[in-house]
Image (cartoon, rainbow, N blue to C red; front, side, top):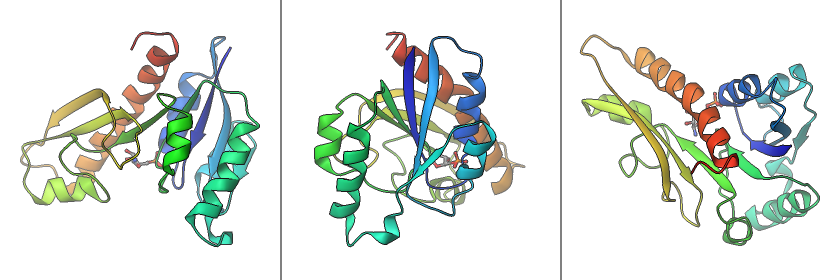
Length: 189
Ligand code: GRF
């Protein structure tokens, strides 16, 4: 059985979609949820599916180094095959990324390298982009720059508002992130 850790900071709709996809799997299991945010809605979602969330509250640490130290110490106690970032809003320090090289993936709601960083759906929409999409990539030492695993794009129809664009993006995420996780763990990438 392959084990997956999900790390998330907020809503957790991707977490839920991934858990649902693997809920009956005999090959892949979502073994842990780690969050830096004690108020994240993803905590409720985890409890609902019987996963005890691990909260490493960022606000209780002196700085990002101390937080990352605690996180790293915790990760080292776990047995797992892949770390999946799903709306995780902290930057993993270089030594963690290097230690788990090719074992951490992320999803980003833009067609990278376009629109790195935050609020990118809104930015792409306001720039009247013809296409939007998602990128699933390995995590490297920088932000949103790692090797791309999969991209999916859709055309923004003229009558779509921002809410509709966001909905379409999340649907893409929920459909493709679990499939990519499956493929990576089954050696398909
Ligand atoms: C997603 O849009 C993901 O691409 C980005 O953060 C968002 C998380 O959404 N990295 P949710 O918490 O999974 O609902």
